[in-house]
Length: 391
Image (cartoon, rainbow, N blue to C red; front, side, top):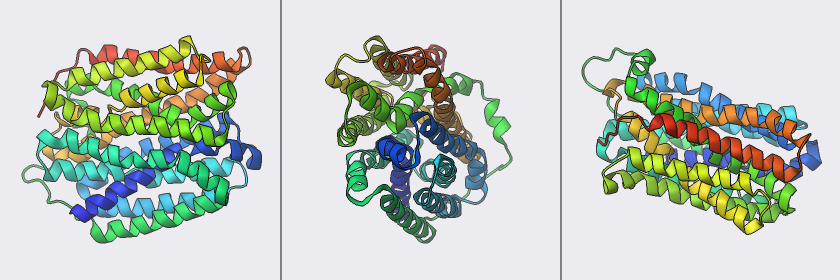
């Protein structure tokens, strides 16, 4: 079981990498195939949209088939196959198709880990295990920053992505061999997604789940590159450094959120205060989008740190799930979390295009950050009425 979990975490490292590597490659993709920030935002949105759409079938598969085949087959076909399509891309449409395939391949890996945690380990440590998994997995986020920029400059972007396709395929094969499906829960196995949606407590958690991860994932996954390049004139390597700092902050946040609920004796208020601070970081960039590179870097790092409440929110929702619906429950939470990123990435492209026609670049990017911040504030206002629960 430990070896299987280790490779599931490694697969999640790849998932984090794939959702973030477009930001660093944006300049070279623009030169080679004419990709614009708007078209890459759409490609990023496709990744998140396919990833989110897969959560319902993935949840059913986890409960009925188990994590071993669910994770390995999708990662091999979608992840490795999509990376190969990316490496062969000749235009932006190919990139968008490839990102959709990669999103499909990455869709089960985190939830397969969460399913095993929920079935095998004590509910009291679910948030900590979930946070550690995301924290370790976020090393992929870091690898998609400066190391990715270095690899692209040293070997070329096509060669780098081909190497990623091979690594992804090998990890998928390791999952087949090493992941063990946990025993099925005893008792009544009947139930469906509708049973989860009938739990009133979830409806006060799901809105923040929908908007809470979107700013940090959207900025780190794409917008940090164009923002730092267009407003401050940073090079690819410098953008990689700023992205790396934001990624480190996201890793730190993932590790921190997990045990804080037990330390403070509350899960709700840890999540709420953290998301409010993340929203204020976005609003500060809106207020002064071109103050300085240092200030902007500190604020995007703060957004990464405080916007890392994803595992804590999943744990909050998981505390209301019946045992036989854990697979569908955690994937429902993931659907809202990743779906929110996808929706906001799709919306961000035309929104930014419209702003760019009437505003200076700094003001347009500032307004984009402002919308991210306001969305999180709305989610926090609804979450304020949620029931606090620690397993």
